[in-house]
Image (tube, rainbow, N blue to C red; front, side, top):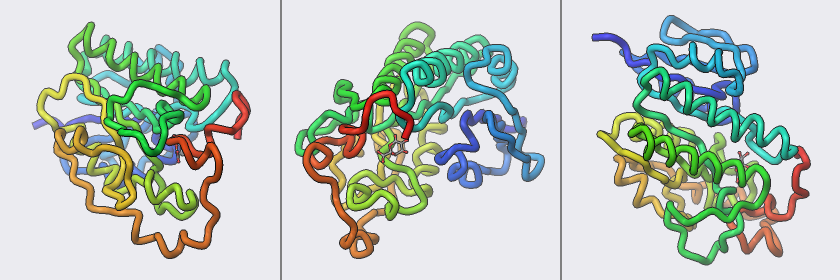
Length: 266
Ligand code: 15L
């Protein structure tokens, strides 16, 4: 049997770095694409140094691939031009390359910031319509729409994950992390579910751990086979002394993104 080949874009970024060792499996090759230099740890890894905005590089990166996990792009606020180019045009380039190469499944990283201006005390089903908090959030809403389009037009399986905050621990996030944290191990469980769910079609799901103070629905992710094992609450005592969000940042899903200056890299 031939190996399953999974292309991960943005593999040297925050989420990519956490997922790389966790998504290693016998019978699977990870093709790791990033603008930053990387080194293969063994024969189960292939390195591609390229930008997601480079159509020719993306075309060759998608050759022989079974699934794409698209994490590449700016992961926070940046200028409109950079956000448009790397996040929106970049995602279009990735989807188009995947389509032309006959890749059936693409998993796209969206973010809670696509709905950053939804209130924290409102219902938050995974398909809540976009209320972005930044240009970054707008780009994530556009990514969701592009994924939906590529499913509807071309029948590709596209799963979009609105990631909360995927870090080793919720500690750098302050008390907000008690609701938004996606543990790296749960992240890997979620990506595995997205890779293996039979014929998912188009899905929009939340990507968070089963945190006691979670305000996001996990129903949609669980329907794909995800089962969280982690809970940010185990860090509650350590986080108790840290200042929590105040004012608008406390009222809305996007927290501090809701008041950060638009278009300014931070
Ligand atoms: C995101 O989308 C960012 O990529 C990440 O750096 C965190 O800031 C996260 O959201 C969050 O909301 O905590």
